[in-house]
Amino acid sequence: MKDADLMFVEGLRRRDPEAFESLYRQHVRRIHNYAMSKLRNTAEAEDVAQEVFEAVFQCIDKYEGRADLLVWVFGITRNVIHNRVRRRANARLGSLEHVEEPAAPAHQSPDRQVQARISLGRAREIIDALSEDQQRILELRHDERLPIREIASIMRRSEDAIKSSLYRTRKALAERLPDELV
Image (cartoon, rainbow, N blue to C red; front, top):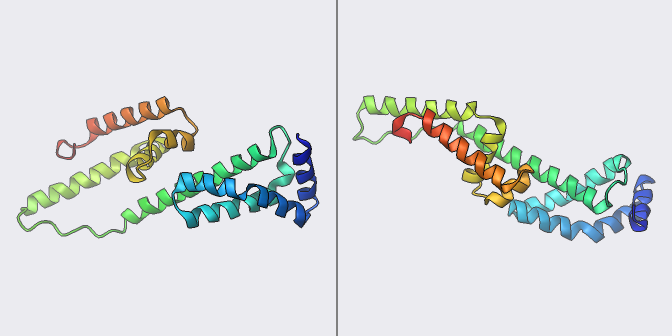
């Protein structure tokens, strides 16, 4: 462990406000910029920075010194961002259940309207049957419109693994979805 890190850690473990303030001033901009690059939302990036430093303060006793303190702080940052993205995605998915279905166009027959609702329900069932990782990758790619590189970073997998998973997921969806939805 670096001497500067050791000084911060000892101060934080003593709950020294000056050590915390110094660590905060030194790294908050980096944490904020990293969160901003992932979340693309200033207010949320500020919230992440605050949450990260609260977690550092609360969890400093768990820091073992195997990596630089900043690496450990960035690990916390990645976890906080990951949790926010997951909560955001879950809120969006949950909100779909409460959306009123739009009125069917007047020119559609009642039979076609019923068939459309059945097909939509089937599509939801198929997506719900995917693994959590597959659902998450689809959300990040299609709902969030994130690039593969960012998805790989969030999921802590290689870009090739993400591309492969997307391909297999899309192929499985195409095979299982009713013909009229593909």
